[in-house]
Image (cartoon, rainbow, N blue to C red):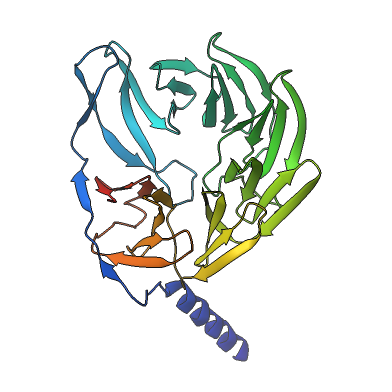
Length: 337
């Protein structure tokens, strides 16, 4: 009987914790201008003034357990011919299975495996495949310059960072939480940087150069990499964003942490029980949306202003994404002015 009471008490405790939500001490009303994007939109083709039909919708990539969305668009070539639906993964690349679209040239290339992430530099595309392999695709010759076997994974827990061209190297963020380093000049594998601390999948979510220094992160640690040393900062990381030489960590338990480029903690604040969507920079501030529907403006010094009045859909069915000064949510786009 005593054992059952202990179990019941534990269940009530954890149920209570999971039901707690962020309640800001002070809010301000701010109604953002919004547009309905459920209807057909249009874009110019490259060589004509004819509009081509463009449909936008929001889908959650299978196997992805984060709060991001992928935007699927219908694309056309320079003559207005239908190319198909592709998921845009960065400014100049979109994918559909093993098909890669270079948006600027409006050309489609067929790669050997399903594409997970990719980065383009000049006529080369560094790509990580869903089966864990990674390689370099030559757009001019339409072939893989090299392909290496990566680490096998069961699933992907968070959004994945994209490959990074760094001097004469290419850094591939693996789905397992490691970073593969390849010599881009000689097409040779150099080494694997083991940055994950977990036995299970802990994929790389951040890979970027800030202040001429290389930073890598998994959901459990942010690392400053140098050939002579490593500096790391451990946290329960949900999102990382860099702004004006500083790094800002958003944690799963509601903390926002400002670090300098040596990973020294400058300031740390907590919004109890807050759950953040991926932040974005607009007009000198960092913006995010909290799971309760609050719009939050964060100054570089971590002073926050919480706004209400926009009725964001933050449920699993209505995904939300911040990009620059725009917030894409369900069938609407909100503009931060």
